[in-house]
Amino acid sequence: MGIARTLVVVLIPGLMSPAAPALASPDMTSVFAVCAGQLSALVEHDWLMSRDPSGAEAQYAAMLDVLDAVTVPEIEAEIMGWRVAAKVAMRRMLEHGDLGDDAAAREWAAALIGQCQRLIVAPGA
Image 1 (spheres, one colour):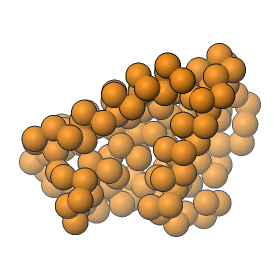
Image 2: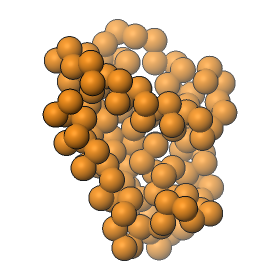
Image 3: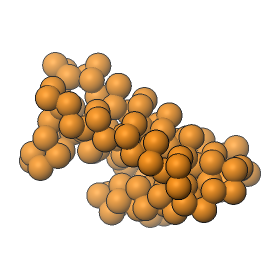
Image 4: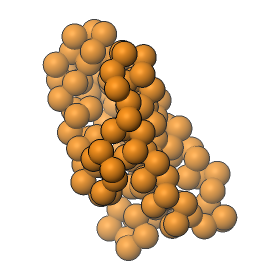
């Protein structure tokens, strides 16, 4: 459970910073950016764990399409920061879940990925 708590702290501050779009805002840019980072981590993790990454790749590509559609040039650097922070946090959570045999981290990662998957419809989703 410790790793899940740590990662929630890593993921949430970027979404709650004053410069970030509010979660309830219609554009949802920060949400899509975080999901893009998380799905990117899932693609790499599936590949490293010798799992078929094709479903995750399709979802990641669909999320990037959505993110590209809502991205405004003024906050591109911020968007990349959200993506990278989310990817690093999700990668750590997936590693702890699979390699560290941490059931809580595995469940939390699955829940976060599931939330992102519900935002998109992609082939193989």
